[in-house]
Each structure stands twice: as C-alpha cells, then as structure tokens.
Length: 125
Image (cartoon, rainbow, N blue to C red; front, side, top):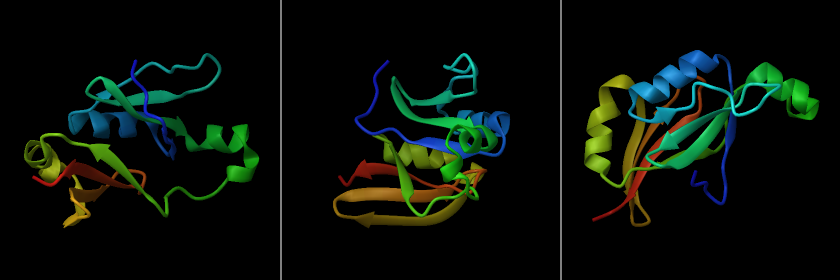
C-alpha cells in the first residue's frame, strides 16, 4: 500500500454512509477496519491511500481533548490526474462549493456527508 507523507483521519458521523459516498464518487473504500479494537477505514485514490475515516465517538474516546463538532476549517485535496473526467463523474452527486484555477492548479471544491470541504485537484494544463 502506498501512503502519502501526510494523511488525514477524518472523524465521521456514520461510517457506512461515508464509505458509500466516497465509493459512489469512484474511490475504493476499505469496508473492513484496519484496527482490531476500533473502526478505522481507508479511502483510496487509485493505488494510493487518500485518507482515513473513524467514527467521531471513537475519536473523542481515544483523545478526549479533540472532542468537537465535525467539520474542518481547512480543505482536503484529492489528486485527480484526469481532472475533467473526475469532475464529470461526481458533479451530479455532490454539493459543489466552488470551481477555480489558482497557483497552477484546477480545483473543484465540494462538501462530503460530514461537512468536510474536499477538493478535486490537478495541475493546470
């Protein structure tokens, strides 16, 4: 398994709903937890791990100081080498927040079922 130098683990309200959502967008999801004593699931972008998800209540139990409402003040970027095809595949399934080209990249921001702002991203042609 290929991992990135930085990987996010997102706290989610409903694991099944979240896995179903990302799978419907064309990502490969790990339906079986990678941990023996709690639920941690992987989301893949092709062969590379994109990020992990874990139930919010387990996150709060694991490190109580992180207990907070779901959501993020940051954005999570998913590499989309074939940007136009990726956007076409998911556009009708997501709430599009913004489409832009900036800093040499094309991006389409959307919201996932947990309120996280995600973005498909690819270098501008």
